[in-house]
Length: 497
Image 1: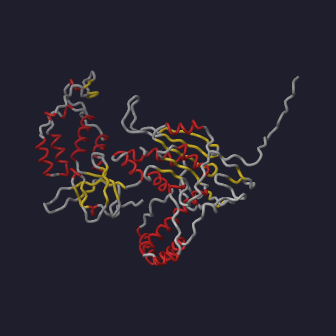
Image 2: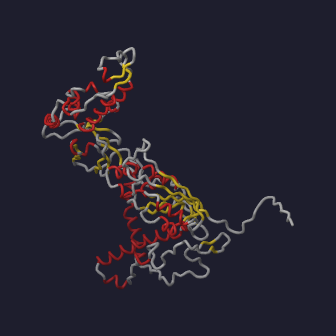
Image 3: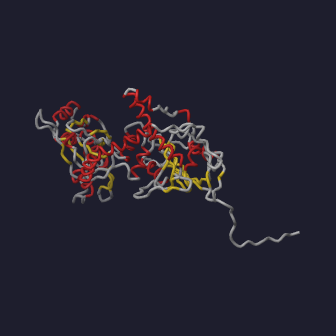
């Protein structure tokens, strides 16, 4: 992930009201953040993330707003003031009806039991506050100071009530924002807080982290998949994902595996760009040739693709000693009538193969469309062939479909000891897996986890935070090959009678 803002990227602006605003960094444009004002987008390009900016006032009518970086000392001024030493005279005289005093007269605790919170205690009217906002002095700080000074009974508030009142005014009038990167964590928070959480199945950041952890998703720097005698790929960091969250789960996995972001080195990127420019003609020529070759490849007929007696059928597995393991009744037969879908053969038929003589007399537009369709078929066929080969290191499911039906079609594609993680916003689909009775395709060890709400702090109090989500975890266990023999000392029991 880049540490600085680049042109063309999307960033999130955290406003004083704790809301998030998605903004694209377009050069020579103006970013508007509603009532807080606007500023030129060029002022953010090249700046680091996680800085807090303040929109300053315009010097003239033709001038544009500028940004001021708010230092950490100013941001934490209130916290530092609370941690400072108390004054020499902490027992200042106050109304006894509002204080809890000791026998010696010292103030133990100030309360707001008799405080009356009325709008009439604010001397400034809404019209006067609007005029101060139009004047735009001090980036909102002058407005907050005048509002606090015009409050007639501000001294009656406790320290907590005063801090809450001041914070509320800061969120309303202070023209500040913090620039945050658009990574998976912030995207999850943005979808849950600002957008429709149902589009990502109400998948929170902590639940997303647990899914990747239980599925053992990690970084593979130099690992490459190995081939077994049957041609199945093993290892190398290959996971099978069923994602109905718009790609959020896949993006989280790519981030954990080090595939989502490019290296943050501008010098290396510039060198790579130069090398790419030099090798671009060669690469394009190399990519064009296989595409044309793929266009002339004959499609496999479904009748020719039937396995012989020596070849394993779909769903069968070959043991280490060469024997075939019988087909499991829970496994779903993969599609054999087409080559670009794993299941449901009728959903996507294979494209037609046009002879070269007909291609020569075609118009260029139709011929180009045919080649594009064939290239798409070649890409999809490579993905489907790798999926059918199996040997995946894990399975992650976050889908509105029934997890039980997905497991029947995918468990046999996993290698031994592969991790399985299934997320669901409700618990009923996961209990269905338990009710079906294990094993599903093979023996599976089972675990369950219930995500907790970070806002649930009081017992018996329900917060409207949406679904918490449930996580089903498992491991695929392969039966041992050959005869199982008992080891150890065996004492034969004597027969009685």
